[in-house]
Image (cartoon, rainbow, N blue to C red; front, side, top):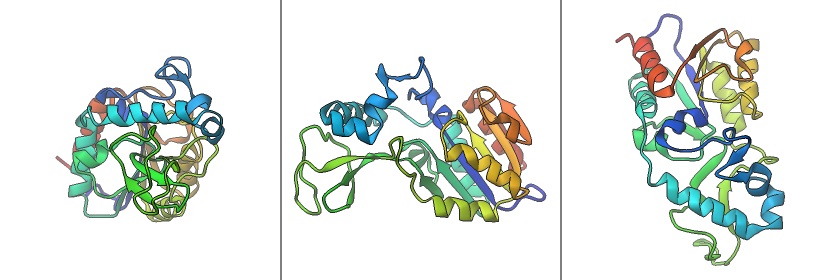
Length: 235
C-alpha cells in the first residue's frame, strides 16, 4: 500500500469511456451526437418532447451495449480488487463499462442507461430494451410512465451523502477524465482540499478545475490510468 494512503475516492467522467467509443457532452461544440444538451438532457426537454428524448436514450442504451471496456476501466478494476483499504469509485458516466471490467466498489451518481425509472410507483428496473413504445412498469403495471434512470441537468445526483461520507474518510481523491465543469461533481476536489486530502487529476488535458489539484498528469486515459494504478499498487 502506498505510504500514507489507505482510503481512496476516485471520480471518473466521460474521458474514461471516450476511448471505448462513447461521445462526451463537451465535445463537438456542446453537441452530443448532434443534439443540444438542453434538447435531450433536462426535465423540461422530456416534458416538451418525450418522443425525442426517449428515442435519443434508446439509441444510447443500444450503443453502450455494443462497446467494450478499455485499459483504463480494467486498470481501475484491478485497483479495486487489490486495494486493501477503503475505496469508492464514483462515476459520472451512465454506461456500465466499469462493471463489465470488474469494478465492484462503484456508485453511479448520474444514473445508468441500463435502468428505467417508473414515475408512477418510483420503482427502478434493469432495462436493456427500448422505452419509446411506452412499455408497462414491471412493478406496478402502469404503461407509459417509465423514463431513463438518468440524472438530467437541473436534477439532484444520486447518493451524495454516501459520496461525502467516503470523502470524509479518504486520504486521496483522484479525478479521472472529467471536464471539471459539471457540479456538484466538479466541487468534490474543493471539498477534498479543505479536508487536507491529497488530490490528483488524471485527464487528457487540464480541466476547468485543474488548479485545485495538488498534482496533475495529462494524457489518454488508457495510458495514464494504468500507469498510475501500477505505481500505487507498487508493481
